[in-house]
Image 1 (cartoon, one colour):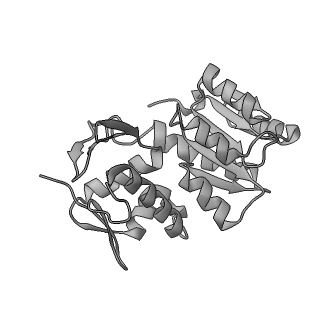
Image 2: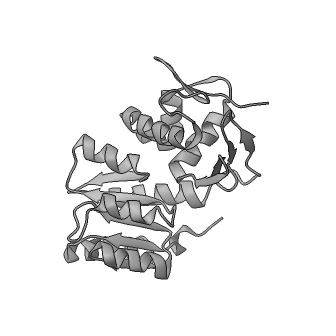
Length: 235
């Protein structure tokens, strides 16, 4: 199994004391490949030079906000991202998750909680329980390769984020049948799944933008009102 403690972690926050506190706590937990940035410019430079495996991004940064930074990172990397912010409003949380972040932790926080959430993301992304070949399958408007986490549509390739990949895998396991929202949340967020329905909707919308011709009128990923979703797979 992949040694998760070897993964490279980028911490982006404009508060030096907080950066140091997070680094110290992660080192106590056994992580040692840790890189620090105080603004977006430093973060982008580190992303290109060290190619981190996961990033912890503050939303409020001096040169641009963390949402914009994630958008720039997504132009060349699909590494998982955890937002860390004093802005705990639902709208901000959904913006961050809608942009493809894997989690959103609100300040003030317990260092142990941050470590648990970080480790949970690393396990989902880099230490999956299943190692058999993942399927390639056709939808009405595209082909999805879960092995390479890629959508092929209209001659173009689009990468899937870790959350999108996990959701499509779970939907594929119940292909052409209804799977409840609760079952999807449980599969993706585990025992902490309660209250993630709105977050699930954000991720479903993002998937539809990649697989549907018209995301507002989906043909492949259908909503079954009051129950959940159904993925229509060809063949």
